[in-house]
Amino acid sequence: MTSTKVWDIFCRVIDNLGDLGVCWRLSSQLAARGVRVRLWLDDDRALHWMAPGGFPGVEVRPWSQTPYFQGMRPGQVLIESFGCEIPADYVTAFAKESSQQKRAWINLEYLSAESYVERCHSLPSPVLNGPGRGLIKHFFYPGFTPRTGGLLREADLMLRQANFSPASWLAQNGILVRPEERLVSLFCYEPQALPDLLVHLAQRPSHLLVTAGRAAAAVRACQIPAGLRITYLPYLTQVDFDHLLWSCDINFVRGEDSLVRAIWAGHPFVWQLYPQQDLAHHAKLAAFLDWLDAPDSLRQMHLGWNQAGQTHLPDLDLPLWRGTVQRARQGLLQQNDLVSQLLEFVGRITK
Image (cartoon, rainbow, N blue to C red; front, side):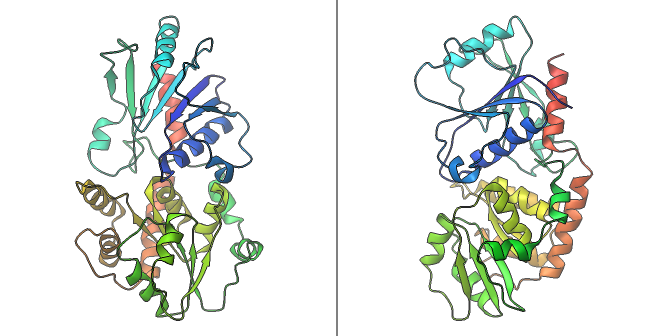
């Protein structure tokens, strides 16, 4: 399905960059389907390394504090990502255009396996106040089941992975892997269990590939056990981050975008959620592990990694965990991807 409509996607960039990662993948995948996308960002600096070449059909525009929408027509579709507040001057223009031609206002929500996602997905939400009063937003929830909006996935993703050579990519990036060495990627915040993990990895030949930023700072703050090889990586493009996940025996990932990419990689992974003061991420983790049908050892690893009651990290049972991930991935591949569902949904509500 293709479209010549203009979509405006608004994204507030937070320190962890997950919102930007999701919105860039969404924008580029929409553009690949023929949609013209304007991606409005309050901070586009991370795109310089995340997507240095841009993408045809995606226009990145600055989200400033000045009234910069005057004289510009809003798109036929408005994506409000993760509850960010849309500027009033844009909403005013959007409301005016909506009185003449039907438009879609989509509130793209965070990913979760919790039960409320199926209940709330695609529900309308009337705007009661402000310049958009009288308009209707619709909630769109990514998810893991057929009654949700699905996950972001390029049409050729599995083919590209099948044709990918981990040995070639590692060599091109100067990463020498020794025989019998376990290759581990680390993309994390600052887990208290990190020193325990490093000790676990050092118990057999392991090579830890540490992503730039918070993960690298966290590892450098630890005492490195003897025998553990570590490579600190530069900031990776989204394409090369996928290649990293495809190349490793197990991936430690954080946040939303990297979780989805770890699932598509089909290799064992451990997910760190963004810690919340009210511990709401513990319920979110439990729901995800239930959906994944995680075996006890993988569940214990996630609980320990996320400080969710389990304090001891179990041994890495990679064959068992690999089978779990690949069964979950196979089920997800039978469902429509998020962009396909979003295009169909927008087409339906703007008839």
